[in-house]
Amino acid sequence: GENVEQHPSTLSVQEGDSAVIKCTYSDSASNYFPWYKQELGKRPQLIIDIRSNVGEKKDQRIAVTLNKTAKHFSLHITETQPEDSAVYFCAALNYGGSQGNLIFGKGTKLSVKP
Amino acid sequence: EAQVTQNPRYLITVTGKKLTVTCSQNMNHEYMSWYRQDPGLGLRQIYYSMNVEVTDKGDVPEGYKVSRKEKRNFPLILESPSPNQTSLYFCASSLFPTSATYNEQFFGPGTRLTVL
Image 1 (cartoon, chains in turn cyan, brown):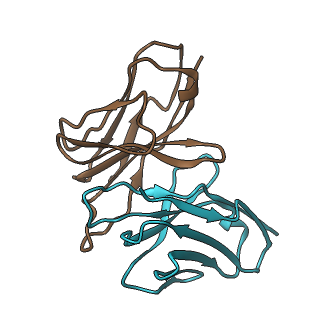
Image 2 (cartoon, chains in turn brown, blue; image 1 turned 60 degrees about the horizontal axis):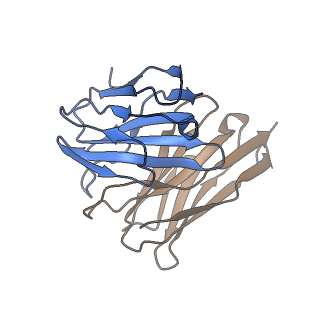
């Protein structure tokens, strides 16, 4: 089955700096890669996603890149702000397969220092 | 308001006492799923359902049961809870995952379960 590895487990940056979180996946059939943000005591919420036919996607200060050959994808947050502090999860899914389970990484706790 | 609801939000119980955590969504989603969240382990899928009467095991199904008799409801059943099932549980729903649909999973507020 699919296995998703996420690094680093914790990340501390100064406000205004960039943050990068990386994930690798094992199943080459995976074709959908979302990123979820979970603030303390809250539920996870989707912040950006990418499909396997796209190499990069941006949404304001957030971008995701995908390298299908290397089977890794990354989340990039520019001009970080204190409200970006949260736990971020990457995930992988094969939406065309017989199984529909979304496999999550273990999460990255991002702390943005003012 | 489009939402996923879970009940109860908090539950303290004892080993062996059967319990059910309910999950309901009002978005007409085909796909529903249960996750447990433990420190350092992230979100691990327990069971998922692609549609009514269709359920499949996730990564950590042992000790859990589910049913999908109606599209909107997906209860999680612990027949004989044990302390290692103490965790934060999330239900989630989405449209049937395909290349043409928007695949965001909407999460419920979570249920914090403690088994003594």
